[in-house]
Every structure is written in C-alpha cells, then in structure tokens.
Image (cartoon, rainbow, N blue to C red; front, side, top):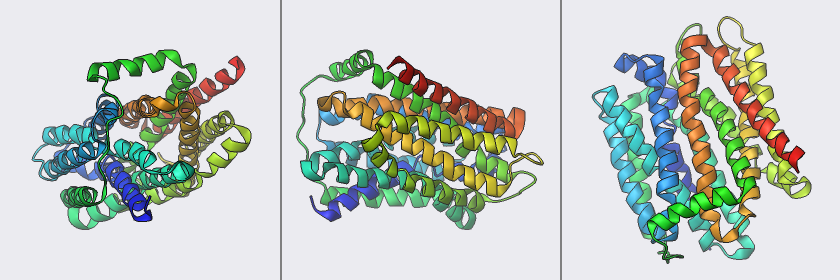
Length: 387
C-alpha cells in the first residue's frame, strides 16, 4: 500500500472528524451572536454528536454492503453542504439543523478506517490502521486550535467556510486516489442492522467496553463543550483562540496514547482500560478541588487536559483491542457498536455539561466528569472481579 495513500486516508479521517469539533471553541461567540442561553448553545455540540452516533449506527454498516469509495464521496459532498449551511446560518435553529447533518455525514471518518484495513497487506495492517487512527485523533484535538485561531481572525462564519473548503478538496483527492471496494456481504440492510443487536447480545466484553467508553466520553465532552463558554466569561474574558489553544494540550495526551498499545501487548488491555479511567478521574478531581474564584487555574486546566485526554484515548485503544479479538469477520460492526456508544456519551456529556455549567458553574462540570469517569472505572473493575 503506497505511503501517499496511507497519508491521504489519515488526513481524510482527521479532517472528517475535525468537523465535529470546530464549533466548540466558538460556543461563547455563538452564544453572543444568537443571544442564546448556555443550555441552548449547548445543543450545537449535542446535536452534532447525536448525529454522529446515529450515523455510526445506521450508516457505517453499509460499508460491508456497498462500494466504500462511493459512500465516502457521497458523505463528503453532504458534509461540505452542511458546513456551508452552518456558515450562512441566519438563526440558531438553522445552525442546530446544520449541526445534526454535520454529525451524520462526518461518519465518513469511520468508513475510512476499515478501508485502510482492507487495503493494507496483512503484515502491515496494524501499523497502517494505527497511522489512520492517529490522524483521526489529531484531527479531533487540533480542530479546536484551528477553529479558535480562524474564528478569532475571520469570524465563526469564516471558520465554517474554511471547513467546507477543506472537505471539498478532500473529496477531490479521494476521488482521484482511492480505489473502488467490492462488497463483502449481500445481506439486506435490515439484516445488517439486526446483526448489530446479535453481536451486542452475544458478547459481554463488547457491552462492557461500550458502556465504559461511553461513560468516559461523557467526561471528555462535558469538558470540551463547556470550556470555551467558561473562558469567555469572567474572570478570564478570553476569546476563541485561547479556548482553541487548549486543544494543543489534548493533542499532547493523544500523541502519548499509542504507548498504551505496547502496555496492552505486555500486560493485557484490561490493565490499560483501568489505568486510563483512573487518570480521567484523577484529572477532573484535581480541577474540581483546585477551583478558585469560580474556575480552575489555567495551568491546572491545561495539565488536566493532557492527563484526561491520555486516559480517554488509551482506554479507547484498549477497548478496540478487546472487541476486535471477539469476531474478526465482524470488526466493522463491532466498531460501529463501540463508536456509537462513545458518541452517545459525547452527546450526553455536551448536554449535561452545559446544564452543569449553567446551574453549578465550572466545579459542577468537573464534578460531573469525575462522576462519569468513576462509573467507567467501576465497570472495568467489576469486569475484573467477575473474571
């Protein structure tokens, strides 16, 4: 598999996933623009994540049934149009509708990962998929840096327009560089959907992995979806660029997360899942207990972002290792179940985080995240006790 194609797939996964998070550093600006309450503006990331979760559950399994290249190109076209609609949104209602469609079509990132696994030779499959996943994770975290910077200098509408342009160019590159794929099954759509529930019922490790990663995602999203609003208000009064810069801290944690794979190989993935959840609990407890004057110190927030992002991403890698060993022939559908749970957690975290911020302030957000991560740790420790 040519290195240029691997890089194209990694970039495509990163840009598609980034579309989910461009709005988060701009939420404070968007709230002012549309005169929206924290609860209302929190629906922007909530609907984006819900759309992504629905797309994972309802659309991702189609990659086994149809040419994956056509699916990727179709979603890229829809995502471009949705981002343009967000850029031109005249009201909060239109922006919310565009956010839902952005989430649905951004699932092309999860079509790219199995495409990379299919194209890679068996001897290099792990390395290839790892490279694409690194691109996806970096897209998620660096999107906040890019969004904050562009919004600060070109406005929030300019950021959505830049995002639409990037996806359009991506579609051209994929059209030119990605080969066609043969369908691997002739199952009907309803049969594909039914198989997801069969897998869920059949495998207890899948259910535990989905529940634990979903809970960690609540904590992850509660932080990132409220950070910009908190920094925009007193005592900081910081703009979108400052909020986006915290994505660099998250990226540092994500870059360290692949080391979890080596630990999983030596000690087993269960150890990594528990360690990852414990890191998330510790980071949010530190931010909650270190609060002064209505918010945590900026340095503590930055350190916390590094630590909890490392914990969340390490747990994700370990959970993928667990589920991929269950039934190799159904890896796409197993991944769809895990990722659906993960993004349902993110949508819930965005909504609950905005409510917590409005009712209890920043300490409420940190407390919510710590509670969700503690529940994930309990799930992993309970599975150890059962074993």
